[in-house]
Image (cartoon, rainbow over all chains, first blue to last red; front, side):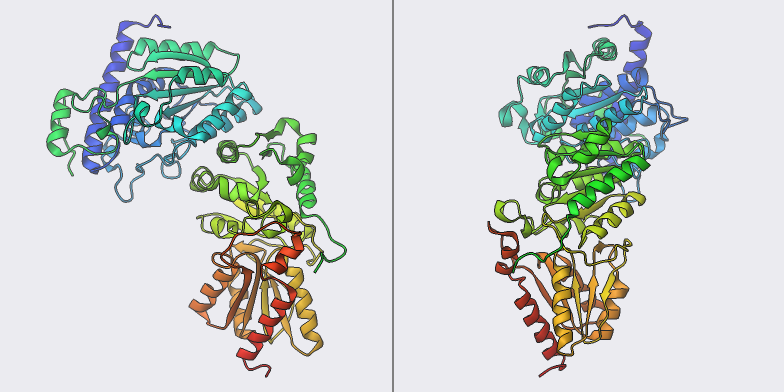
Amino acid sequence: MTEEVPAEVIASLEAKALEVRRHIIRMTYAAGSGHPGGSLSVTDLLAALYFRELRVDPERPTWPDRDRLVLSKGHAAPALYATLAERGFLPREELLTLRKLGSRLQGHVDREKLAVIEASTGCLGQGIGMAVGMALDARLSARPSRVYAILGDGECQAGPTWEALMAGGHYRLSNLVAILDRNGYETDGSTEAILGIEPIADKFRAFRYHTLEIDGHDFRQILGALADARAWTDGPTAIVARTVKGKGVSFMEGQHSWHGKAPSRAEAEKALSELGSSLGEAAR
Amino acid sequence: MSAPPKTESLRDAYGQTLLELGGRDPRLVVLDADLSGSTRTVLFGKKYPERFFNVGVMEPTMMTMAAGFSLEGRTVFASTFAVFAAGQAYNFVRQSICYNHANVKIVATHGGLLVGPDGGTHQIVEDIGLMRGLPGMTVIVPADAATTRAATLAVAERSGPAYIRLTRENLPPVTDGTFAVGKASELRSGSDLTIVAVGALVARALEVARELAEVGISTRVLDFASVKPFDEPALLRAARDTGAILVLEEHSVLTGVGALVAATTGENYPVPVRRVGVPDVFGESGEAWALLDRFGMSKERIRDEAWELLRIRGKVQ
């Protein structure tokens, strides 16, 4: 499942992801609230998607034949905004407006405020259903667009997530890829302690998904899985990406307490120093 | 009281109108959640199978899928029973459809007590309140088949989310089918009293108004099929002209049209308002029309409330 990718491509993705992680810390620090843990876990997946996989164009953000990405775990908004900024869809300076009154960067992604967002999400268990609708539309319209939905593991406890996944399998949507950011933790603790979702890959298989399990921080594996999904024409693909909540910041890694709280100034400075950067303009 | 003679199916009117819309707009898609025979979307499904998605018993995801289609620029109709559309799927309608300003038209059948024998679990009397509270949502409660057809066409023309509440029972024609979103229809002119009604109770409003006319009482009857946007000028004209308003709805009086009328007149032109509808209770099994009587919407009760308002206004002793 690893792809022959030149080392410089990997290095460039790692550099982008590092930049995104720095933004996430500055943004949530400046906002005084937000979801750093699940943003840091999904960062590498978003970097691989936006810098290598998705057919999107900052010059034409609503180009009809573009690929769609629906962030079903809408609380990872900081990661998506930062990735979009690095990809040229919005100015980097705007990132520090996250969660502020009048900002386009709402606490959970909002397409009415920011047109490059494909679907407003936040309340869980909904994004995957919209992605299924979009994938059906692409098929019906004979458009080449592919639709990628990023799910959180907490929302795999929600019934409607499985309703929508069932529909994707039923309609054999080979243009649909469900990517699970399996960081293992939800707001109150570990998913397996609260309401176990394992064996999760078996569940996707049972719902008729071509299912791949990867390390969600290994770019070769991520790119390999995305290429595999693209080549798969017999129904939808699910990628179970094992990730680390809070990835890249030592004291956030694997700590569910960082699901939905912002770092203090000292914590943000420590995190940024680990990430080889500093607070810069970010202020609370 | 039994159902009035010469009635028409609102659901058939919806199903036929959908067929017409499907021919007119080749991108229009329709979703249903395993009730396509009852909602009549099956007609569309037979004619346009490639644009019809019967998703089974998953109303929340029917709403999110409908939103997904509409975010790609399609007009989407989604149908099921009102208890599932407005109740089961509420937060999915709220976020995926309304928050996204998705162009999804929810046409919910089997609203209110007139579901009948299925009982209280399926008789949603809260849906108008739930749906009209959603920012950007258009809410329409047709009183007959002609208005159902006109409303279905009207919401297809408008961009944005809409909720049309249909009743399971056939209803007599009471309008000439002229309907505009945001406009009340004056079905009968009058100066002593106004009856505002929606849905199945519009016919009862007209019956009571005719009876009152026989004893010299002049009753204005307003069909407020467009619950949202709401024709505030027509309501306030009625308040000024007649000085008393009786509201009839097959819905909870806590959150329905009566509450809206009372609040609107209270703020702008206070007059006595009486609300006839379902009190703060769930329904129960029974013959559909008998349930209306049982839960306080009998013609006798409506007549009594009308006389009470006339007495309050000093128009009768």
